[in-house]
Image (cartoon, rainbow, N blue to C red; front, side):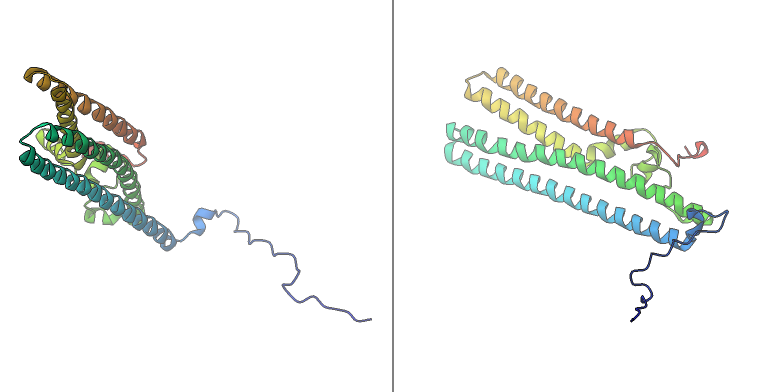
Length: 246
């Protein structure tokens, strides 16, 4: 009667996982070099993701401004041909709402990109804090913050420190604020043209246009405030800025 020997490793029961020695944990088993590699990989992933979000924001804003420029050139040509007659107002009421739609979509997308950017900034600041835990003597070489509170995020995002007019100027000059104001102007012009077509007087046209501008500003500002509140809800600092540095 023939006997078959089972080859080692074929059909055999899997070997039990090695048990770490008593007194050690999984965290202790990860070497500092492995920790640094994991942190560096995540850091570069966040950096690449933030770069893509910035590129998309600039391309969307550029597309909106290019569309707005083309619409203004088209309106100027129609105005010359029609001597600012009915054809001009009809053409403006067709083309300007399309430009406004692109502007509103751009503003919404910029808000989403800013939210994503805030996530990446908080993540990278926490990773810098981990770097400093591994090598505390490197702190003096870091330009960006290693704190994940509002102050630390502002330093990493390049917001001018302190009070006064500088932070306000930084906010007004930001791309979302520029798009917000242009959208409000477009809304005011469209509503004024509607009043003009309805046969309103000069004061009524001005009042309706101003109302359209203010309503558009208010609606977009409410949306922006909700985005800011959403970002603020992320600010649950694990590594807050020391009181002495505030």
